[in-house]
Image (cartoon, rainbow, N blue to C red; front, side, top):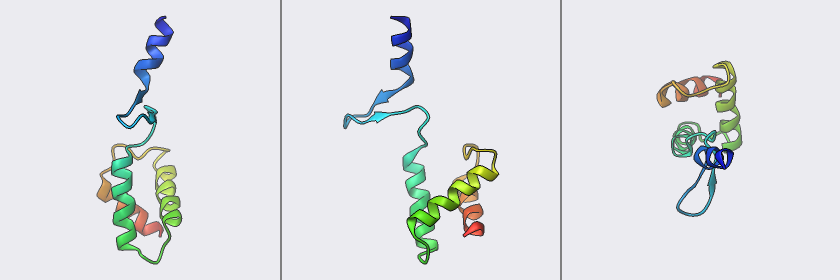
Length: 80
């Protein structure tokens, strides 16, 4: 029972019934970031932009949290 409680408090289901992992990145911020980068670099595909953001994450020891979106945008733009 206790382990079931722990499991249920570590994840959630959003109002539309979709499972949300506690380890998922903030998709709202990620979506905004990708949209800003697509506007700034229309010559690159979404996949190329996402790949560049992943490279920024790799360079930053595997995390993006703690970095301002504008900083991530600048670092990603430099890679693109």
